[in-house]
Length: 296
Ligand code: BTN
Image (cartoon, rainbow, N blue to C red; front, side, top):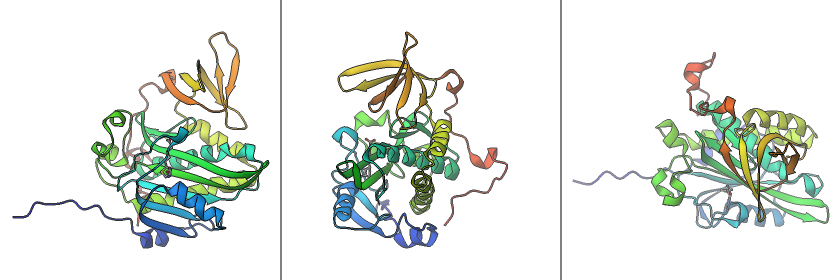
């Protein structure tokens, strides 16, 4: 008698294409069974002139990268992809791309699965307080102008938590773990690309204020007491808002306001109104329109 083996289903590119209703993002889609890093490959493509909207996907990454050059563990059945963008903006606007991508991911996860996805500044999306997605934006600039940017998105989709190193298990989650079922990665990818296109369009039309409004609704840490590691310094305060450039505004203990453009954030104490509200709920039961939106 042979043991039952569960074999990872590779992503079906044709199903993604069938579902995809974008003009720019996802054209073309370039799929690899294995890559060192989709960001690395997307940068190479961009350097060689591939068009805005090119998306590089890999089933697994052997050298996936996170912020601050950390390793990003990328086993099969996650969703690892990078999008080439060519925004005609001053380089100082580039951090906004991470922000808009986090809005796209959190909105999509809420809409498709009814999970209470929340953004953790600057580049994480959490479900039930645990990281389900990380975003890494890299760019090439010439002086003050932008040559291209690559927005890399990693979603912990269908793998078992045990595929992650022990050190990450308690702070990470997967969509499969939260939903107690596997998701259709093709649907997730096409929906994410559509959402990316719509927020990127707003950004290109200089309507970043609208993205910020969405961000404020999706951010889990506004109102919370937080600590941010900025270089060698630890800054503590209450996260009160985000500014026009995507920097976080903190109210320090002495009442002084301080704006932080980048850093590693830890929530020390959740916002009162948010305490206990991070449970997942099912859209089928709570939405006035119970039609599931995940389809293929
Ligand atoms: C972070 O949270 O530190 C960011 C993680 C970003 C991971 C994604 S997976 C797709 C793309 N390729 C990479 O090597 N990194 C990004």
